[in-house]
Length: 188
Image (cartoon, rainbow, N blue to C red; front, side, top):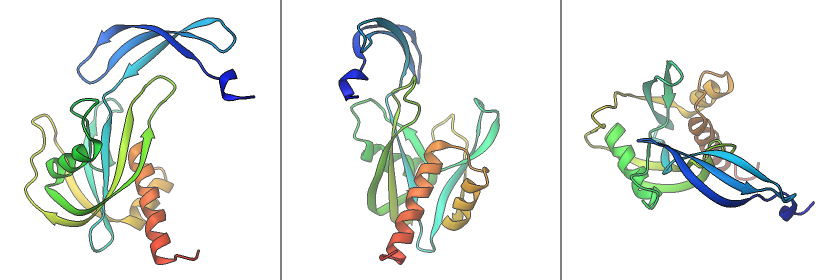
């Protein structure tokens, strides 16, 4: 089966909820078989997230309460783009500084994560930041976070035992761990 036999075509859309963070739209699409269907899509400007590793191989994590899931979480620093046109790298630098007060000398793009493509167009750009040096943090007025450092190996263990459940954090930590393992064992 070729891709054309799987591809839906956008016909028209309308905003049904113009939220502060997301906008919900109803999209009419043409299905590959010629029929039409309604898709409900949460539109998000996108975000950037950072796996920041210090010289001792510790990852910088933020602890915060997430009311949507009703619990405290451990996450890598992250934040939404100011607009869909903002450069994700500039957002990553800003968010690392805001949440942790850290600056980084070296940056590497890890991937672009499509968080829930079944109903949402959010993309999170993941970066690895090293060569860290401390400045002053300046979180948003409605943002309350505690910053902590944890050995990357321990953070990966918390992914594997189900303690860390945030998707961007899981992907970022696992990619960073694979890169670090690759750099210390280049031939497998």
